Length: 135
Image (cartoon, rainbow, N blue to C red):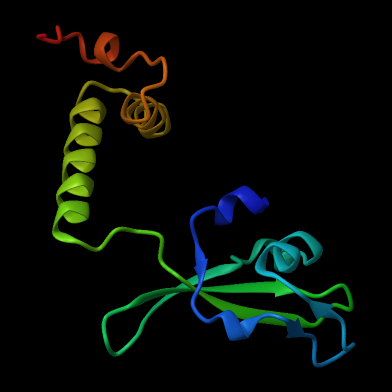
């Protein structure tokens, strides 16, 4: 897992850092240092687990191994926009994804092209859908 995989996650509490490993005493000053200097979980186990707090806040629990081998955990807020507009945008994204899948376009390729389109990057979305955009 790469540090970019955690892009957009924000620390829930500033007080979680610095974080000290209880086994070896090593101190991680920041979330960035925590991700860079720790390792993924062994044997292909996921380093991420979602959880929902009583107030509906979605958390991402991140499990990483310290350099001593001890497992550390920290919680981060979900980067997903939970506003009404955010829900509408995700629905539109999913609808576009399904339309592309119906045209036998792979999910990975479809996601990539939709994201490029939304970010204003060169893409082949219009060609893939075989449509004309109106001015």
